[in-house]
Image (cartoon, rainbow, N blue to C red; front, side, top):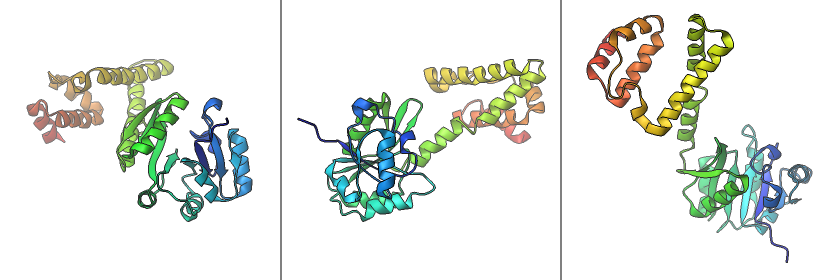
Length: 263
């Protein structure tokens, strides 16, 4: 007996490049595929090699879970199709894959009885933003199919998670670049300077993963004040970063007061 599909898809844009399109053949238990038009739905079904195009969003009611994907610059057409559909949402799961509905939309679907989650990949993990057990079970199944580890964050915490990612990626790149530049000024050739700068940050990250705050070089014993003054004289950002560390970890109060006075 042929099993019924577990998922429906509502999407627009390059769905194939999303988590939905990356599901392996054995896991593509996808049924109805809907979009802004039947033509687009057919194109999506063909691109992901799974499911069948449908003309009406109401036909998505045939499956217990719906995977949604849309471009962040144009969510309105897809969300309007979903919100206007005459679907009984009670007991159904909505997973927004690599995209995020507005808090108001999520709240509205929740009030209609749906379980919702926002899922995105980061660092070999499938981050699930949800507090709903039914939605989390679907995300965990998706994670297994994709060979990822599911990690839950609280509902509404997407911006906080995003800030953490930004801090550890784009915000820190200028520091790595400046470290490489200083190594070049010290006489190290370009390519080697870049590799050394990257390895310094990688080692620091590995140490932190192993020991947490105690991996901080000055957790127990503060830096040499004289040496720090010499280094900070040519690289002012060092003073700010050291001061931030002293304040964050609550260490070496005398040095912290001295650096604060010199700002």
